[in-house]
Length: 334
Image (cartoon, rainbow, N blue to C red; front, side, top):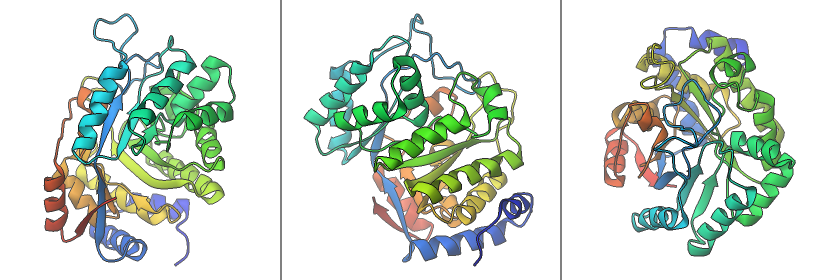
């Protein structure tokens, strides 16, 4: 089968034939991951601080440094959260925070070293290309220096946060203080050139056009052709409540499933597509497994950013396995 072009992807996103799209995406998933196995993870999303100077229009989580409810986790609280995760069988921590203006770079290195010293077998899936670019600019270091120092301190893999839509027209409206698209891509590229692996994400359903969604996919696919370092793509739906974009209607189920399927068909060089049950709920998240997703993400012992926007879904490993089985697939922890 020839590779899907951007114009063909756009045509599919504008089509109304969701069942056919799902069938095609599911067939591609089965070819990549035979045996109807659908994976999941046990991990915790730890936000080490909620202080952020970015001021993104879509965020209900961040606070100013002087806000009464701002925080920076100390080592005791951090290690307690990791210990609870390990007790539940977790072997990975998703570690992300805001763009804090006052923490020195050595603070981040010490945080990673502390985590690895106490929990050497736990993978730190930490920071994001956006945070890496901020560190580079804020501390006067090259992106490569930042990544090398964090890697040496214990960083295991790089999540794809802060991507939102990798089109500067959109970024200049919703997150003007964040790294532009090419800087985000360069940080991911540099990490992968160093031998690192990570994920790519997209937040859809706010101020972007359908064409810009395809442009985002194209940039991710092009970088993957170059480096091969993305292990998964995770599209998730913008949650408008409590944000400055609260007037926007949440993207519908039909459109989400359609985009999930087209993502699988277009990103032929990325192994895994993840269904976002954290924003869609477990029932719809599991339905996404029939529309191109082969991974359900994590049971998410803790999640704060989406919850701040009024969307709170929680689950257990048992419920995950039951839901995947009920959907006709075989659950497997990755």
